[in-house]
Length: 332
Image (cartoon, rainbow, N blue to C red):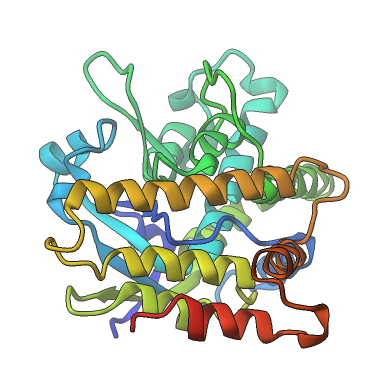
């Protein structure tokens, strides 16, 4: 285990991706309120232990296909990581910083100013964005490279870039059970920052920014190649906001695709199977989140499917997930 690191240090020369076996953003207003209260009430001269951040370095054969991020890795020595544990907190921090950047742009005296001309204390908006959010590739500055995001086949990938980070030319952006939570988090922070600004002024917004980037501390752990990230995901993510059974089942199915050797399943067939699993779960969470006012419960959906598909009765209660994970879909 390494020494405690601040968000400022964590984001230095790193690119973060949320892999496909991870669940989407699950924090609701309850967790957001706790985060906000912890931040507001933290004295500026104190540090706050935020938790464990488990990372797995991304292999070259994976990141070589990252068209927008590859130049940072090859030209500037950035290190690419998948987030195994801690993505809920890290996503929250990034949305919070994005909300601060939008607040700065909205202040009347900053109208028509470029990012390098807008300041939060001694921090220019350009520097804030480049450290935590997005870097534009020179010399044309056309390609925007985000330092944090989802893998491209995740429906939250486009939503985060276009609805949260406000990248234009989005086309159709799919909404799901999880993107509703991303949208709610941004709305929560924008409203609270506006109220805080009206009450205390810009200097206190700067104080919040410094606390979130310098005073909240993580234990950063880099997982080795011999460590099973799928088992780690199930174990680690059952702390905090518990994984739903539908999320656990998806992780299990993706894990099982990795166990086939080349004689049983060729690499392209294995990738195709993994893609089918991801596509199925995309559709499920799209349907569950279609009604923004009343999104459907994912475990209720899984129970209903289990009853119909396997012809079991409701009388068995939670036996369904034990059957699915301990009998039906196992490594044996």
